[in-house]
Length: 307
Image (cartoon, rainbow, N blue to C red; front, side, top):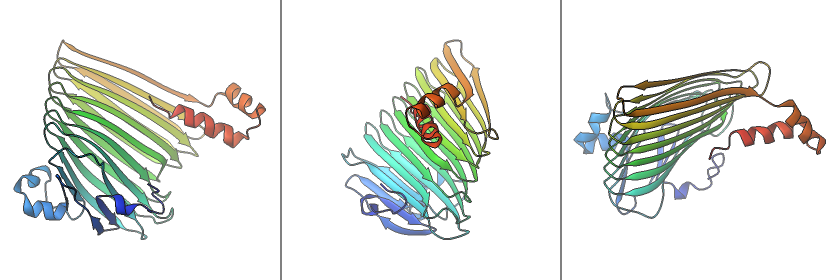
């Protein structure tokens, strides 16, 4: 989907612009509602939010489907305060693909996007979940997500933000049950951005596992402060892979990995590094006919590629 022109909104299950719901489309076996309607319809929805939401979506995958689930939330007006509460539930033994696009139509809207998200994977379910952000340089974004994984469930999550806004704060908690697994990959490129990251994974079940990979790129006086942690509460395995790349002389990246083992059969590992553009590699590419900007972009693109 082209997030700027939103040419493909007819293919999404939920579409919101500013604070107005523009489209809701349910599939057979998938119920899609505004979170306000879901709050009124289902008592159990109220367990996941402290107070009645004012905006956001509810997606309940009840049966196996072939089509992916997608949601799209945009900001089109200046100085909009967008507050969302989103709930995604995948029932037992169901495998699904999902994507969410959050973006600003223009770069100078000076708006605020705040979201509290809950993703619940029931026993032996799985989801491949892609999350894309593209906001303007004057916007502020606040993310607070919780992922609940029941026994045997599996989450493949990737977050991409190729141009972070002036301020981005992201909090994510992964609560991982018995035989459940999480792979979390995040790519954030900052340009004059202030980015704060607080990610935590709790290995609560026997034979649970998590891999968390983080790639941060600082450009044009960007500042990153990242704290990523894993708690091994039961027999489990976890790995942190945190890497930062500083492109200019004025950006700053701070990486704080933390491992906490609370069970002798839990094995947790980490690797962390922060570097800069290699001058030798840059000169090599320029000697092959690339401009300095093209060479830097090529190096950055290679850095943010995550297997």
